[in-house]
Amino acid sequence: MDLIKTLIPVEVAKGHWDRTGILSIPNLLREKADIVHSHYFNKPDNEWNLMVYPKKGVNINADLTQHVCSSDDSDLEEQIKHIHQLRNEDKFTYNYERLDTSNAGQAYLHPIIREIFFSEDFLDYLSEITDYDDLTIRDLDCFVSRYSSGHYNGPHTDHYNGRLAFVYHLSKDWRTEYGGLFCRLDWNLKPETVVAPPYDNLVIFDTKFQGREGSPHLVTEVAQHSDKKRIGFTGWFR
Image (cartoon, rainbow, N blue to C red):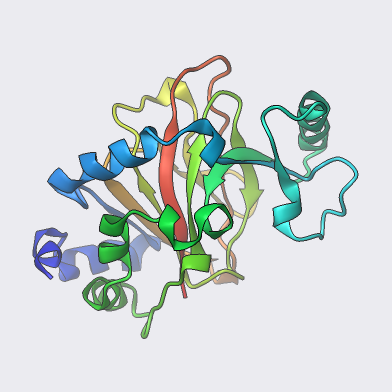
């Protein structure tokens, strides 16, 4: 695949990965990035699932599909108050939007994204860097997220989802003051790495950290009353 020739050389990327367990790949799609960007930024609001976790009155161990709200739900304000109260009690909560197989089956995933992330060449490239052999990815392992005013994702780990986690950032000219920052945390939940999502940049990190299963991370809240949209393709390689 020609794309592989444009990426960070394996020996350079591997050196950084071995030191940190995290890798940033800039300019992943290059001129094709604008096509994918336009595709997702122009999607109508009603095609996005509004995720509120945990929904008031729903068992927190229930399937995540039960935590989908609608922007015109009569009790949405109460649901948001509920998760913010739990958040103040240091409970895990989140509020953002997503496209995944529950929205439109495989159609949610742009063909350019599928061509890259599901290719054997790209999976082999990542295996060489991370020493994780036979990496795979499925439609169920990934989704497209959209964070706007007030949206966030609380501290959590992903080790049960796969060996590598990733976020491919699709927001142009994103600035730190907009919020929506990706933060990798230590086990005391103190920031280790903070990323203001750079456009056309792929961040990959090990779902093990400091010898333990899991790698704590979060997405900070997008500034209230902001009109900015933080969109990314997110998932796990198994």
